[in-house]
Length: 146
Picture 1 (tube, rainbow, N blue to C red):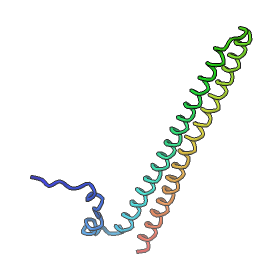
Picture 2 (cartoon, rainbow, N blue to C red):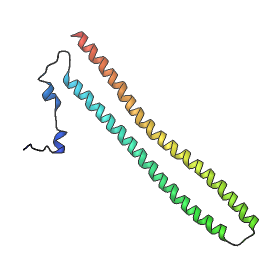
Picture 3 (cartoon, rainbow, N blue to C red):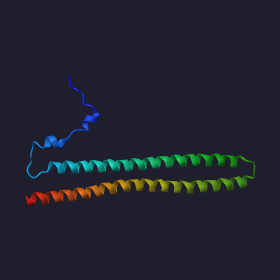
Picture 4 (cartoon, rainbow, N blue to C red):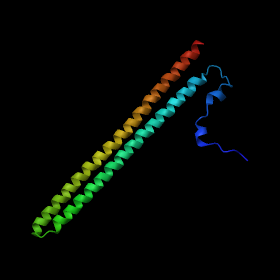
């Protein structure tokens, strides 16, 4: 019967112990592993930024929905009150115009929130990519000097 590995043991895996036996000429395993660790950390951080951005958007959408429901309730009360048909028609037109303008404003706000979260995650990954390219260049320079 095969033994089951606990999930936390999977993360304790040290590849340098296994790769050290291979001794590939010109390859610094420790540097390679360290670089990959930083790549994973950057990806994790980018995912956290994207998740936080999504949470903020969902929270704002809930606020917008709550506000809209309150406004609809109030508008229904206002329209159902007695009054001249011309006044009610004017009020309905004004409410529709205001609702449309608020909808556009809310959509713009949500789009900006999403773009901001995406840009933050992209900038972080782009920075790590640049660092990675610098590390590769430095590794080639070091191996050429040997």
